[in-house]
Image 1 (cartoon, rainbow, N blue to C red):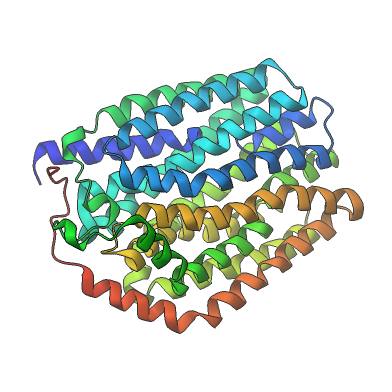
Image 2 (tube, rainbow, N blue to C red; image 1 turned 60 degrees about the vertical axis):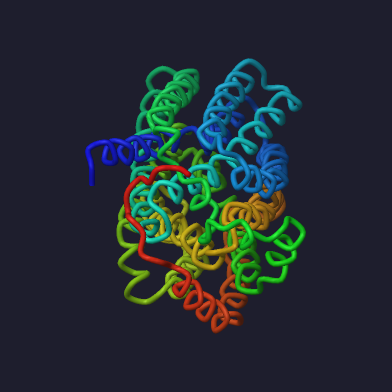
Amino acid sequence: MSKAARSTLHALDATNFFMADVQAGIGPFVGVFLQARGWGPGVIGAVMTVGGIAGMLATTPAGAIVDATRYKRAVVVIACVMTMFASALLWVSNSWPVVALSQVATAVTGAAIGPALAGICLGLVHRAGFDRQFSRNQVANHAGNVIAAALSGWLGWRFGYGAVFLLSIAFALLSLASVLAIPAHSIDHDAARGLVHRDKTHDPDTAERWKMLLRHRPLLALAVSLGLFHLGNAAMLPLYGLALVAGHRANGSVATAETIVIAQSVMVVAALAANRLFRWRGYWWVMLLSFLALPLRGLIAAHVVSLWGIWPVQMLDGIGAGLQSVAVPALVVRLLQGTGRVNVGQGLVMTVQGVGAGLSPALGGYLAHAFGYPAAFLALGGIAVGSVAVWVLFGAEVRQACKDGDAEVAPEPSQPAAAT
């Protein structure tokens, strides 16, 4: 690999590292920030749900834009600017409309960043190098989350929540610099959307592509399983932080930072292991393992609300989310290889996933308010059993589709390729 190619991939790694704090804005700190200003768990859950719905609606169009545009770096740049805007809004005002607008802007940003970075990665290294490089990208992303969370927790404890907002803006600026360091000409935009054949006669029209996606049973099984998983999973972390603070067991920013650092540290290990697990057992088994982590996590969270209980609860989160962060985009690429609609497929999966994630805070907040935190954790963990059931039911079709995807993969250089 040439020096220029290595430099390009290092810039991609840096983008994923700094983007970790950008993709979710101040993320889980929103809950404790609003709680410190008198907001209750139900209202917090509702405003976070507004953001989740906005993200859900934006993901599929965002994937379609990434497939169509030859300015994928610009998508990331715009997302960084929006995140800075959202952070500024949240700091300026605590009124419900302003907080809701901030959450909407953050969610739309997150919806665009995922497909954009996956598309850039696929355009740089092609299908043959995607699993390895994307696993490396996710290691960088989770490492960035660890550093950002640790810094946020310390800054929030030492200087107050204002320092957390400033850190988010600093990471956004560093993300801008990193993505602009990726040469635009190094991205192969046909490969970036999973189009194997350069002959445009092999590229179906828009209507046919959409019909293909909506009839793709393995892709839909993946989407529904993830939707159920995130319906139970998304509220678990912020609720656990709120439970600790409500019981006067921890400082808000410190406890939230600890939960993130533990989970993201385990995600680094899970992301490192994911590529080997793909080769050993296949994508279906890796996804099943990730789904099984959540019911156990909910059971532990319901019975252990303490500082030491953070460890098993968040380690399980790290296993599930860490494996999925690599497995889901890689599986979508495998399932849709050759269609030219990889990124809109990513968006479609993220949309259904976003339905679950968007409804989860409101559901979790209501359950915690009406029945208490332990009952909420048990209910959220129980929902994930549905994701396991769907995944097992469609297991044979998913595994066969992965084998068919293997047949589409031609040997390609696992390094940045010149755009055509």
